[in-house]
Length: 322
Ligand SMILES: Nc1ncnc2c1ncn2[C@@H]1O[C@H](COP(=O)(O)OP(=O)(O)O)[C@@H](O)[C@H]1O
Ligand SMILES: [Mg+2]
Image (cartoon, rainbow, N blue to C red; front, side, top):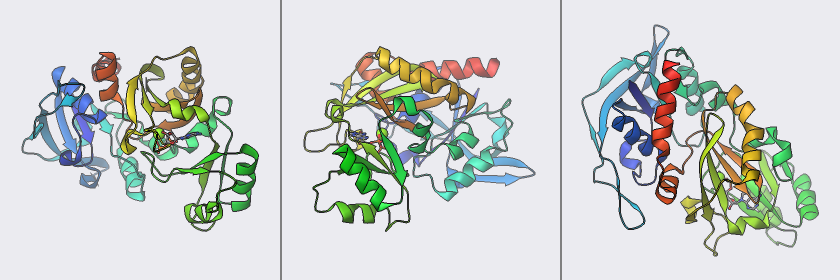
């Protein structure tokens, strides 16, 4: 089968860390043809979406002393050209956030594909609709106390009532712009003004969960089913657990509570055709639903001796035959 990946430039990817590379590797090992393109290389013509697709082969990573070792370079790109994306069996839309207007346009182009012929992961219309922070609001029974507002007074009252809170820009990833808020902070007003652009942008403000110091669990869901998890533990000099800001990864089980959260979210994910998703869970609460380009596969594979890429590729193959 033909597996296309819409990615950031290959040279910018980290083969030992990025889930996209893990999926590419697994698809190649299963005998599928890999193609890569970028958002900027999509076009529409005759009612069809085209892309400058390059064939690519990847050199699989190997396990070194507690980390993945990648060849340099880890990929070889062949001669490509314009092709209709309809010639692909599956398209993984894995461009990293932020979700810009160009990203939204790209999803609208991808929406021209016939879903029964070319499976887009995740469904382009749901990539438009599901903001990674706001989507969690659909599941009030499993999220911490949360507000979304542009209004400073509303935030100040919330922080006062909670004692401590975490502020999140709606378009952030990897811990970007995440702030710890507490009532006595002399910078509090100014932080709120800056982060809401003086009351012109929404932010999410959430009850601070002290359990965050023990880790922010990433649970990978495939078609609503949890297939693996990894914990990300803050360094101690930093309250955020994201790997992008130095969080340490550790193996972690999927608990009954995690399964309860997954079961709460799964029907909606399936309805929205959000097939491949990363939930963030802190202290038994859902804090974020990552739908654009969830990370974690490499770490889960290494720490739990599994191959989530293999499972994903097998699921895709079964769904396409299905
Ligand atoms: N409610 C919360 N309580 C405590 N810490 C939090 C809370 N929400 C997020 N964090 C911390 O901030 C980090 C980033 O939060 P998250 O909502 O996952 O945004 P993103 O990963 O997109 O930047 C988490 O890894 C965690 O350490
Ligand atoms: Mg997160």
